[in-house]
Length: 295
Image (cartoon, rainbow, N blue to C red; front, side, top):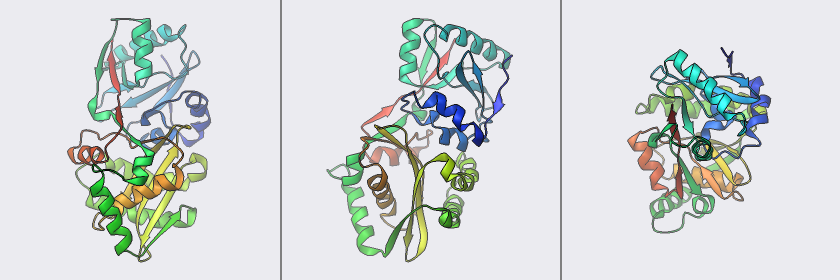
């Protein structure tokens, strides 16, 4: 039986060894994302045959594994056999969840027709053109553009790049937002991690801006550069009562940090209707698929 170690901040160097060479396209393999959700999903990991294996417990109580990182074509079969043993031991319905398209291509090429593979629409990540998020040009984004213009014309606002002195301002925004948001129960776990994330900003190496209106903190956004082609937005919280604030913070954040990166990943919608509607309204270039795999 493999020994899985609970995830901690000190494990970032180990994860970087496996994630840095892998040009992943989804949010599931960002260490920041994994760290944020480690308590909610009881995330742990182990190294097996020089591959990183990540174990999660989903909200339904079932145990699942992410696709192995650092595998080779000559050891993937050995790794999959070990995962199949674990699947049987834990009585898990799925062998691997949230697998990327690149892994599915390897899997089906090496082992055609061996595995049942299912797309999971609720976990697809939304990928956007960074230039469009900055310009808000075109008919599709006209409402976003109008809201943005309304905000900048009607508010006395300031934009600050995050430092530790702004920690409590972000916590104030976060608490206010979560108190008013009840439609996504999963977010209660996210709320618990915001302070921890901000307190470890130097180790986790993310970008963050904080928005003030009339010197009152009212919005912030956290993201990271995954590679030269893609950035990932982890958290975006703002006062919903201020018209155009979300359009402003979305545009401002990308323009400040990611204007030279072609694509922006704004993560999945979790099957929540309002969240799906909001993400679709920004006209994504594509939805990056994720897959469930069963032997």
